[in-house]
Length: 114
Image (cartoon, rainbow, N blue to C red; front, side, top):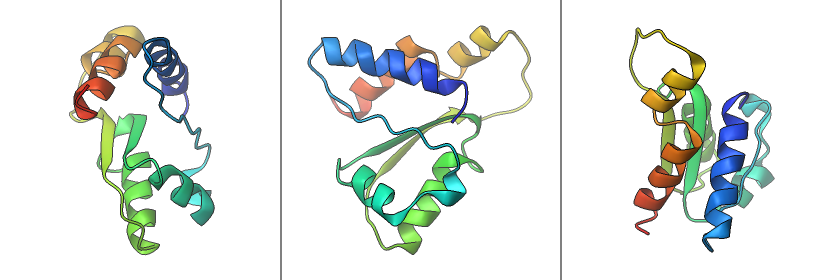
């Protein structure tokens, strides 16, 4: 959601140029995500969530809860803030939390074992 979307788009574009195709789904309001959207996302076999919030209380957790409630099984890899407190420029913090486009590319490849 929000600012990380641009970084995710850039990472997905880089991977596409390498012949690796990921489906990117923008979630404006995770509380309003439909069952059809959950099924569509889960059909890939793995869901990545990217958020500039705590990974234990944001988009990934909401998606995991909604999948479980709907009895849809799919692994989730949550990317986001996993510690507090830090300060710095937005670019520095995105890089520190491995949410910059280069780190996202690396993480996607590692998780997908490519």
